[in-house]
Length: 423
Ligand code: ATP
Image (cartoon, rainbow, N blue to C red; front, side):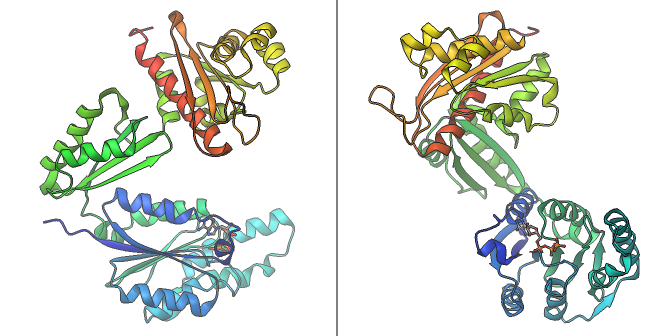
């Protein structure tokens, strides 16, 4: 029987407890651990006070996890104490690691030259950052701080705080032999993304299929308009895991839009690329969010022609070609104007798929006929194909705008699915 490894994360940083910085590192690590079959049991966040850090680390060590990962507190100054406290807690001396000192010295020599400061000023910091627990494995720095793996009954991985540095050093840690051994007991996963279906409906279907009674571990999570189901199972429960996932796919049919970790925007960009089609947006209430989400996907430039932030009525008319009398007759928030925005951007930018959205994001500006949250979305494509949606989204301004963007991307997906093959 597969025994799952367990882990805890220790996030350090007063700025996080002050609400100034949002913790991104625990999410990065949590998703990665889940993907590797490791059960994350706890996340602890502490400020930079030495006694707090020490108490938190001692507490986590006493809990007997297989793995503890720390984030932050590796800077060159003496108030960055994570490595020293990990050394102390694991009963190891701090020793100078010569190879990493050479690496850091080369890095800070480059910084010093760029900034015109004498390198001597940075050397004490480089020496401080090269002190590691005796017997630890050193991971090359992504910034100036190296990561450290301290093996033991509980293996402690010490990572830098800046999120891109943490991600880079963690990627190196994952392939280090010490960790590769720890996380080799892999769970398999089936990820299903289900569009526009209530979470409770998905939960009922899951229960009707027998739930997690046969060795699976399933999470059902509603994020805005999508429900993400992750069925995890060890090799010995593979049959049950697949039966559960297949049952859900059958139950929800076309609403299951993905069996992977891809976002809807990544899926849309891929589908446009596959068909050699381009897209453009004319966005009123989302003011560019749809274009931004498409633009976030690597390779978007092959498919995204551009977009209009068409907020004011005269901009809708002058820039996107929405007839003024159409706005006059139906109002700016209407199916007709959404359609005209989609057609307008298609024509003005010469793209294959035009996306138009208009709505009342709130909190003000609603009326009885057009309440806050009402949105109209239209997508037009080749062969006269079109998709349209009218929805009234609950929630605040941010929720209405985000949901509108997500729904618009789904309409593009649905339209592309209807395109004749080879078109
Ligand atoms: P540095 O060498 O930059 O001091 P460090 O390893 O000591 O790195 P911290 O000092 O804890 O890391 O954090 C440096 C910066 O990285 C913080 O100001 C913050 O902007 C960002 N940061 C740290 N931890 C997190 C986190 N958990 N989530 C998001 N950002 C973080």
